[in-house]
Picture 1 (cartoon, rainbow, N blue to C red):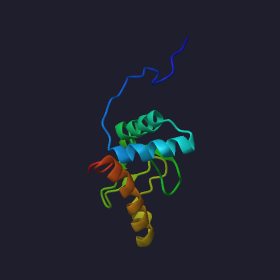
Picture 2: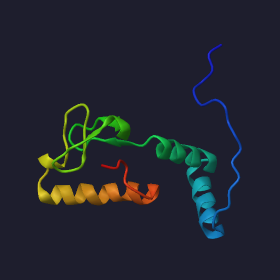
Picture 3: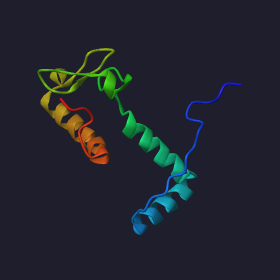
Length: 112
């Protein structure tokens, strides 16, 4: 019988701010989501982050994307889109959306 990918589980013990944990538990109960599932998804993203191309919508892993030498943004492996093709207002909006990921990950998705 074939085993599912990531079928081996390991216990994680950590300390989290009480107010944050209480609010997270409340929201998880409200949304019927297990905290362990949220942590596992976040850690999976942290270990191997992915993004969606703002041009074609293709999901790709950061490690698959090359940095554009002109703008310094990831180029989509499917369509080649990067910041170079965006007008200034759109580029600013995309940049601020990307900052959410970078704040969560405590650093740039991919260093140049």
